[in-house]
Image (cartoon, rainbow over all chains, first blue to last red; front, side, top):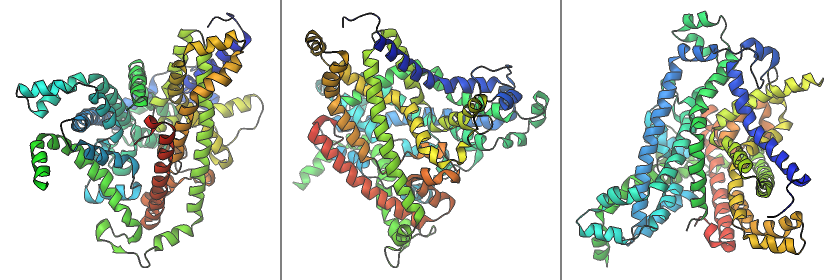
Length: 294
Length: 307
């Protein structure tokens, strides 16, 4: 648009957008700064953008002080990796069947999946089914299975697969390949863009999930990172019961509870911030695929 | 005929087998809970399970109990009012921010600000709860430090229920504006530039162009996204409420929603009868709303409906 290079409205717009963008970044900086501050500074000056005295004590105590944090990290990574791989495999396999044009009853299967998007039994029956009938209480599967099949993702993948020409299936069939082999060897590689997007959706929701942990996991060793963060925010004292308590004492006589909370927050969002440029690109792509669905 | 069905299924047995894992998962985690809705009419006994428990006598006793509870009524009211607030403010922010971004000529600035505003979408509500605590805590919160520095009284946010609809709205906007803007911005960038060129030749100001070109172009998207959001008005975002408010019961008068109410009845007070009755009503109303809003969305734009 040919227009004046500088104008009041243009600079006003830039100002508003800048302010909002900075406010989105601000809490992140405050947490990082808090995790590097001494306890005294937080008590005296509150949370600030820049730490007055930089110290890494909180990180040292965090990793020394608790096997639980290492455990929780392990659980979160395990759940995210296993959940993502299983979910992408299972949903794309199901989506392949729904996209298979030679299969007469594929629409019945689609309806079976759609219904789960419309009807919802709600928390109480879901919880009782999981605990009472499926025995998921305090098991690692409780953190993975309930989120594994996702109707929305299945349709996203199916729509993509619909655009792959049917001739590929036909010619592979001529060569004697079975359906599973066609799916695994041909359709999956061809669907890589959508599988990458869905994989990211799924990985993010597994990494950020704490609801399943809250509902099913009482055993502390099985708590994922996000849930541990919540526990720590409400009660930092449990660190003192760790076997490394004396080593922690040597670093700091008092547990710097505020900065430890911040340090654990930084550790929790670390992978996401680190992978953010990558995440963002695929997410926007995925959103667009979803927006122009058929 | 019947033979034909069986032959067709047998011919495609590999495909059926490939569908089996999702079919089983959806059955266990979506269909069984649906059947489990009958629990609202049962006198639930853990040892007998949902389907083995005795029916209530009278059948609607759980509901009587629910309707006589002020807390339940409060939860329904809060859910609807807060969601209505989130939807309205969200719409204004997301459309407004998309329009603003669309006016920016500097590509680099546009990209950076989009990246920054999209970032909060990727973190969990638990982390947002920590952020909120950093800002709002009575002693070390940044807001109160600012207030005392400029000579004002600090505010004890975690006991002021009246402020929380505003705080929660800000939190939702902080987390979701960047995400919500993407779809509107995409709709705006797809508008043919010649409309704007023709308008500016006719002497239309930028503001008039927004008013008469951009906004009408966004109208279908706005209507559909709003309709779909209204369809979910009975369902609160449990994660947000649980992470931001948690067990701060002083805040419940304005922040206790159906989902947190049900959760508490189920896990804390163990009142499964009341929880299941509330959940049953929520599911039924949500179902009607989803169907209705989807039907309306379909009327406006066939491709935007879920089904």
